[in-house]
Amino acid sequence: MKEIFTRRSIRKFKEQAVEPEKIDKLLRAAMQAPSAANQQPWEFIIVQDKAMLEQLSQTSPYAKPAAGSAVTFVLLANENELKVSTAWEQDMGAAAENLLLEAVHLGLGGVWFGVATADAVADNVRRLFKLPNNMKPFALISVGYPDGQENVFADRYKAEKVHYEKWQQAEKENLQ
Image 1 (tube, rainbow, N blue to C red):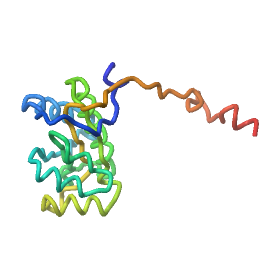
Image 2 (cartoon, rainbow, N blue to C red):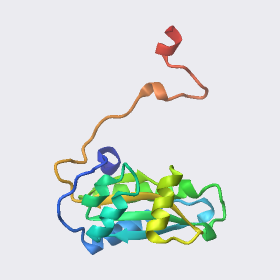
Image 3 (cartoon, helix red, strand yellow):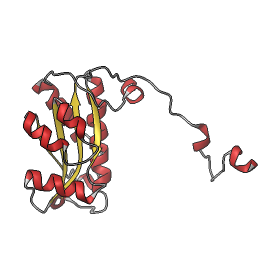
Image 4 (cartoon, one colour):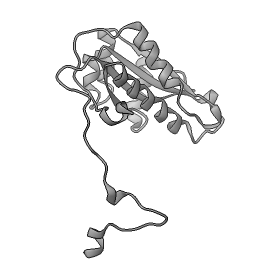
């Protein structure tokens, strides 16, 4: 559980390669994710080439840190595998979170860049990799050894966001 509580978005990485066995573990963790009707629509492109990482970093205004990563995972959903067509983003989100948590477990840092959330970004990724129409770009996850940032605990729990049995407004809202 330590990984859940200490995971942070790490955007600055050391110039150090991530070992192939760790990349394999990250992929295995991602593929252990729950999936609607066990459809497992995920496919991954592993990008380690510095020139390609630079191109990938330009697919979105937020993806700049990909250029400095040791490896960036491009998460794709194969439409041909969908049994529940409305659940692919949930499946992919679970796979992404598993990958990020395994990164922390392995002493790595990672950051998730949304792709499916913006048509223009998805189109940029589609063009860069010349993806067939059945492949739906979901996210980029850049990973590497953290440089100056750490995975550390920050308490995000907010009791006012928890409701038991029915909807309740927070006390503060009731007083206004």
